[in-house]
Length: 98
Image (cartoon, rainbow, N blue to C red; front, top):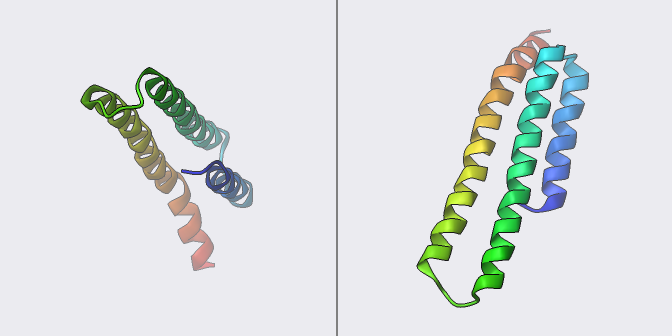
């Protein structure tokens, strides 16, 4: 994901938190999910750069390493989306009922 996409998604989530007035515990969970995904993105980028420094040729072991780290980012993103839905869906449904 491109850095500008991450910025806009994060900004939208934070704006939604303020709009819906989520609780302090929900803020901690939302910010924790954001931090988790951002940190794993940075680790993923660092590991990819190191792997590219080690070899520029195709290497199955390097591919496996990159796939595992990318999978960790994907898993964190999926879990964050589920957590976001659990937190925001009640607010959204209540907002739409009014």
